[in-house]
Amino acid sequence: MKIAVLPNLSREKAQYYTVKLIERLRGFGSAIYMQRGFQNSFSEYGICFFDDLKEMIRSCDLMVALGGDGTIIHCARYAAEFEKPILGVNVGRLGFLAELETDEFDELKNLAEGNYRVENRMMLDIHYSENGVEKTCSALNDAVIMRGTLSPMPDFRVDFNGRTVCDYRGDGLIVSTPTGSTAYSLSAGGPIIDPELSCILLSPVCSHSLL
Image 1 (spheres, rainbow, N blue to C red):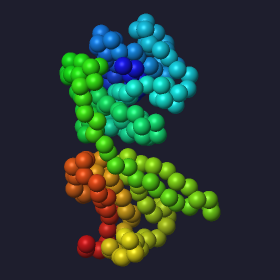
Image 2: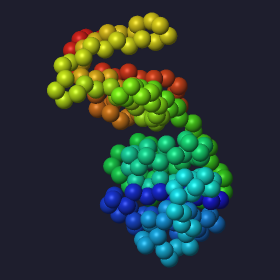
Image 3: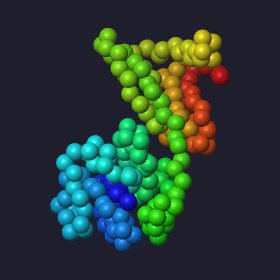
Image 4: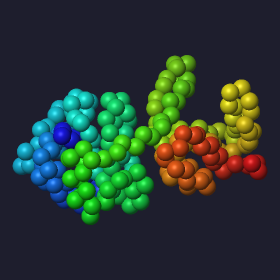
């Protein structure tokens, strides 16, 4: 199996655990891919280094992101683009999105042997206009509509299929996937939703009306 390893070395002990991860995966017969920028830190481990990130992901069978939830979310956009499964290893704090902790590396044997299940997560496609130009982006977590620093408090109306869901005044609105329910939405008082559900969560930010 060809595995692309994407670590966030700014995390405490991330380099140490990345080495342990690489050694364990190579012990199970996996080929390891990494970006060229990591070559000085991991040159002695028989890794295939790539200059182009997208080419590396296109060529691998699976991605392993080692860091916190932010690292996993950053890598997820590339995983979605090339339809590659991604495994999160937590070396952050909460690690809601991670499937493995650093004391569970023995479980990587199942990964190398193909003994695992891929869990599909829904994403959002966001369409918006910026300076008259129509743009589109994708999000695993959420899209947030916020007022500017000096702008007056806006009025929001949420419509779905031509029907009004709610009206309110507030600082903003978080439109979240179930995966994103444990991120900004949770801080704003939103509920935690099972990530396998297919639904969209709306969480007002500092609402000035009772919903």
